[in-house]
Length: 306
Image (cartoon, rainbow, N blue to C red; front, side, top):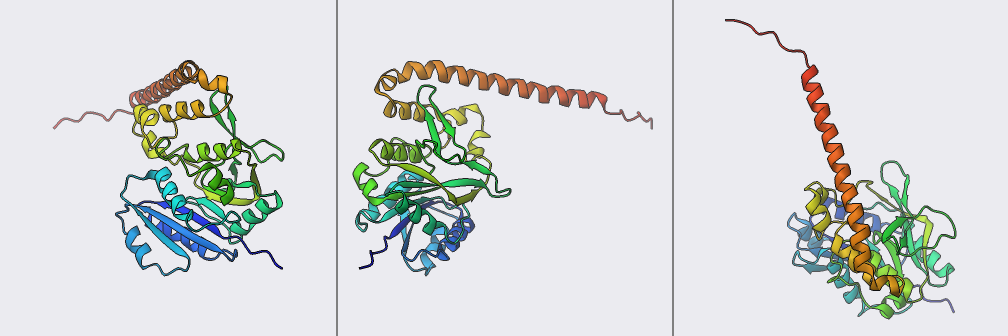
């Protein structure tokens, strides 16, 4: 008897990116995997995304609605809660962002890699959309230094956490650890916290060198960072949010390091913060000096008399 093919439930949080969301659904629509169910969580879009999704007649597409306050973590958590009433342990959840490009055998590769590696969680290689260069292959966590280190695609490297831009999770793993902690990590770090929790519960994390998501190389929180250092380090939508990073290292790693996470963070994080602010000041001063020198060296227009 042939084993039943597992269903892959693909959860995609979206908000106000109608054309990007549309393109992502087109990529999923041509996947060669035979049992794919897409769940789009629209978190209060106001740009026509909701109307597009309402009239979208794609098979095996479910649209869930948010009020604009879910953010990435809440949207992914809502999708997971929905899937919990449908999935069996042999099925999978695929975390995916809408701002990626994928090949038409992407889902099949992820499932085959998981089966081949005895039900492992499988992440994707993140590649630069314009050049194809590798950006990362998952993360190793430096618990002592309180840092997330992007991995190169070297066989045998330990993977501690995986980006939610493309991560295939056996539903049995999801059921064993529960859904994502969206209250603690409403946006960034929600995916790294969740996949780290799964690894800590005994599941193996790997990154498939054959499965790639093509993404923009620039920071996804670029607009937040452009608002200044306060937004960069304290906004809930910033990757560098200091409180969220402290919480992460209070929850993960060796117990002794967790207990002294706050004083370590104040020392290490404070030092890094001061160095970054100093570097920003130096760069700003150099730019200002260059502008002054340029202005001084500009040829002066001769004065004319009437």
